[in-house]
Amino acid sequence: MRAHLGCFLLLSLLLIGAVSGQRRKPVKPTKKPPPTLLEPKEPTDFPPPILGPPSIYPDCPSECFCPPGFPNALYCDSRNLRKIPTIPSRTHYLYLQNNYIDEVTEQPFINATELKWVNLDNNRIRRVERQVFENLPNLLFLYMERNNLKEVPSDLPPNLEQLRLSRNQISKIPPGVFNKMEHLALLDLHHNKLSDSNLGKNIFKGLKNLVQLNLAHNILRKMPLNVPHNIYQLYLDRNNIQDIPEDYFKAFPNLAFVRLNYNQLTDKGVPKTVFNISTLLDLHLAHNKLSNIPVFNLGLEHLYLNNNNIEKINGTEICPFQVMSVDLSNEDLLPRLRYLRLDGNELKPPIPLDLIMCFRHLKSIVI
Ligand SMILES: *[C@@H]1O[C@H](CO)[C@@H](O)[C@H](O)[C@H]1NC(C)=O
Ligand SMILES: *[C@@H]1O[C@H](CO)[C@@H](O)[C@H](O)[C@H]1NC(C)=O
Ligand SMILES: *[C@@H]1O[C@H](CO)[C@@H](O)[C@H](O)[C@H]1NC(C)=O
Image (cartoon, rainbow, N blue to C red; front, side, top):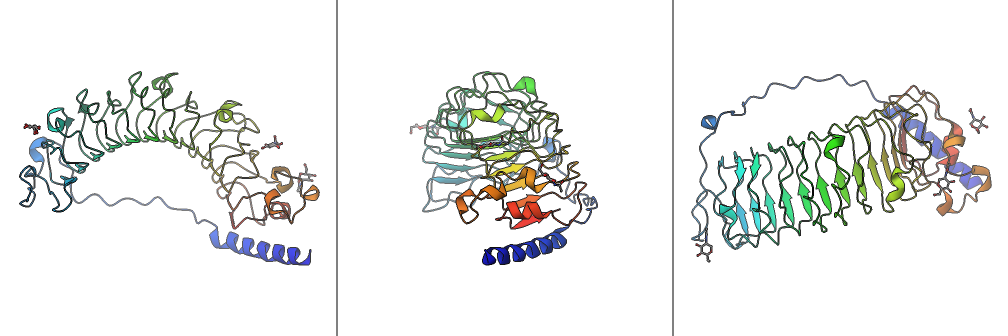
């Protein structure tokens, strides 16, 4: 018991130290310096393509670099390309990021059936011809972040595992595009223009193995419907979500990471026990309008509640067990919470004693 108390006193001192050490200073919005290099707008402004070095491979496109001794890789990135060159059939890894490519057509890919990984990030792509990717049965990773797509491309390869389409202008998901993609594990659509009506009832149907869904930075007002059951990470930051249906998270037996920072959540829109999910490890609710701390489970490790309207905190009430009724030497029964952010609320130090009594694993708390 004495050892316990000693530990506990040390912990509280550490915590108070952590608090004074970590109190956030108000951050002034810093003005970004103007970019020194203007992004060219017109195709006539694009700098000329840069040719690759001479190659030992006769089929190496002149715009690209074919590393000797690594025939499966083709580097055509950052070469001011307007068009995709003809891809040799031996290519597994294709790097086309940071160019001025504005469409993806079938011709260059006709023999490239071995492709596993295609990176087209940071181009000007607005159009993907139908059936380009459909004929690539080995494609596992497709990256098209930072382009000008207005919809999710149709005819995606059936074996794809990762699809990254963030930072486009996507406001449409054609019905059925994901229907056959049962190997897809990661779908990243953050920073687009998706609204509730674009996420129809069956849109994610078929994504049986999806573990990460990122819909952050869109214009959703509601929690997305029919998210696949195996989801592990669900990211919805920076939308306009106001409320969460009572049983919303009950459908997901593996859910561990939930991010809802920068939404419009209020106490009224958040049912009291909606986040009491036994598998949850990491919960982000910063920059909302909550005034109460929602109920959470024993297993939660990280909780972000900074920048809400919380005025008081009662450690006894939020403790996931009754301190008096539990054998405190049994580690398994103690709450796992290690990191708690409460800064940017109406709270003032010191940290209530009952909070520290309850959360014995807390390493850092910011008020
Ligand atoms: C595709 O491969 C076939 C057979 O190897 C070859 O004859 C043809 O020229 C190739 N097409 C292109 C566009 O490279
Ligand atoms: C939270 O869930 C646990 C089961 O994981 C349950 O025992 C507990 O009573 C729930 N808490 C509340 C306040 O509903
Ligand atoms: C915290 O809540 C408990 C149980 O509801 C109550 O008995 C206690 O007085 C509260 N503590 C404070 C400081 O308000």
